[in-house]
Amino acid sequence: MDPGESEITHNFPPYFKVYKDGRVERYRVFQSVDAGLDSTTGVKSKDVMISPETGVKARIFLPKINGPDQKLPLLVHYHGGAFCLGSAFGVMSKHFLTSLVSQANIIAISIDYSLAPEHPLPIAYDDSWAGLQWVAAHSNGLGPEPWLNDHADLGRVFLAGESAGANIAHYVAVQAGATKLASIKIHGLLIVHPFFGAKEPDKMYKYMCPGSSGSDDDPKLNPAADPNLKNMAGDRVLVCVAEKDGLRNRGVAYHETLAKSEWDGHVESYETSGEDHCFHMFRPDSEKVGPLIEKMYSLMASNSSPKEIIKEFPFFRVYNDGRLEFFRPPCVKVPPSDDLITGVRSKDVVISSQPTVSARIFIPKVTNPDKQKFPLLLYMHGGGFCTLSAFAKPYHDFCNTVSSQANAIVVSVEYGLFPDRPIPACYEDSWAALKWVASHVSRNGPDPWLNHHADLGRVFIGGDSAGGNIAHTLAFRVGSIGLPGVNLVGVTMVHPFFGGTEDDEMWLYMCAGNDGPQDPRMKPPAEDLARLGCERVLIFVAERDYLCPAGKNYYEELKKSGWKGRVELVEHLDEKHVFYLRNPTFTNALELTNEFISFIKQNNGSLRNSIESKY
Image (tube, rainbow, N blue to C red; front, side, top):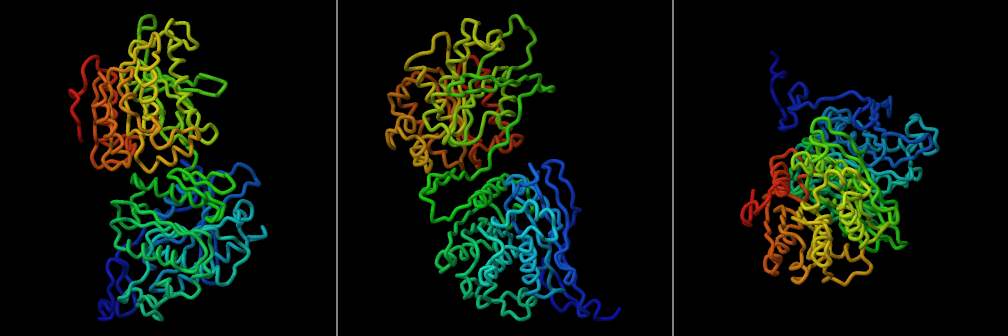
């Protein structure tokens, strides 16, 4: 064997090594996957040629289109891989972009730039810039690609990338601003776990880019050294970092650089705790991916300048013309159904037409039509009083499970949401639903399921987050004014909202007729707690939930209030807000659901003699 065939001249694990004869061997080769239709989401993808001369290609992702004239925002994506690995055609890129395109209802194009070291830098930058120029060629509707001509709104373009791709996305945005690329409008950048340089030279980057020092005097590695930074295209930038990522501090530094620069835009950051570099690509099923995509969606959903924002809350922002922009896409609703496995049936009912209040009812399998009676649970969903639905799939599935395993009728309330119906509509609608349930006490109410099978001597109220707060107010009303014919046995609150958190200001904004920060609906006083009209209360909290202290405080205050019932607190360690809805098959989620169900099934006594429980 020729010595040149085996002698390694440059070695950069875990990326590549170079032999004396010029061969490049990569330590890892990522799998590619064909374009086509994703049957789960309906997203279509296809590959296009950007430049026959250089061989640069791209993959376009198109969501379901509702009409021939529908125009959608366009995301231009640059993949990661340290400039030497990865592909726009890889499994990870396809999985991530299919999910993002489906949830955000956008078009995405991922540029497959040339990889170093075979194609030395700055070729990857040049290819990526050429990709954006190719996109811009469709601005008059006469470009080479019909999907972009017909459906891409080039007045709403976003650039995105992870790792090296984030570095490239920044570079392309600067080029677009410096050259005054006028045929498209770049609204913002999604910079995810970005690679930038440091004071010490990066030997691999220097090898891949022979003209670079590999350190922070190179504008491509250090935006602060770039005189064109002030001209960067885009009104806003979202910088995403991960707590355990070795590049975290470089992302933080990039955020600080933009914030201090003359660039006339708005930059914000988002950190994912407990995660490493590009976790959303390597582990797409992680529970942390959903919130990251929601944050990306919030940036792309905005069409306005950050200067027009007058208030920003955890769920939405308010503009100076009164418009609201919600950070989460609308939830997907599912129809009622008959569960062939459990025998649970569900249907939707109208509780009130003025105002409109509805509910989904779940009834377990009936084995004795004439005599069988079930306890009844009235459930209120969460969502910050402004989002989600009783008809959303996570709530449908949860209520279906509770109905089956607790052998109970569940009435899941679709109450009014802000801004269409500001607070206190949620409380009034839920109270109307409870009174509607009570109207069946003489077996001549409007719904036959409740007339024939609801045992109104065994009624429970439950809810999560905002719904947990609503559950408290209902129990207080029952104790204050009564509900003839109904015996409220217990109340279950899962990760409930109460005052003392970052959500307080948002609640006050949504409730114009509030009584200030001490409003009893947010911060129940002892005299209200003492009047809860139930025998038992079960409170769930999650250790890493920002509402955990509020839930624990409610538990302590209820014990001291003089209320005569029994209260129990169950805490799940190392878990976040409503984790059981995000991952219902996880061990802790199953345990929480089982505790919830046991609370309904028990006849006397508390689950653990009122002791605090932790998992």
